[in-house]
Amino acid sequence: MTPLPEPPPTRPNTAFRRLRGQLSPSEFAASVRRAAREIGEQVSCDARYIGRVESGAIRCPNYAYERVFRHMFPGRTLTDLGFASRESVRGHQARGPAGPPVPVPV
Image (tube, rainbow, N blue to C red; front, side):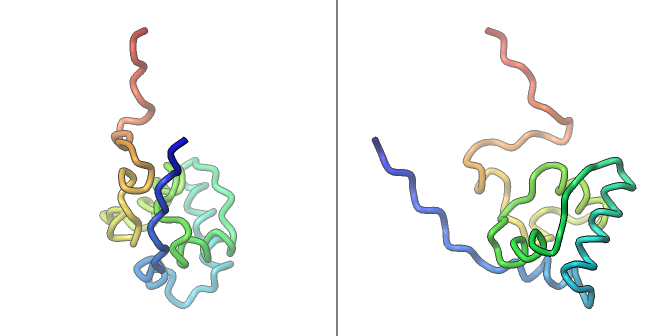
């Protein structure tokens, strides 16, 4: 079996850290949960998640978090928020903004 390639080294997400401003990780996580409720999303954001994002352990958020962050910071891309592109993280093409992937005929 061929070994999996080494993941790139983590790099702190300084852009996301700047967006947090003076709020503590817990306070910022609460604002993320509030923003999620505003748009009908359900995320379990806590201080640990914020720390993982800021440390670079989370290089690209899942789709629910992406929608929440875009709601919180309108007009900004994932790159503007300090994240890597979905393709570079997941190794395949990302879904478009339309939602779930189109089924492939069998």
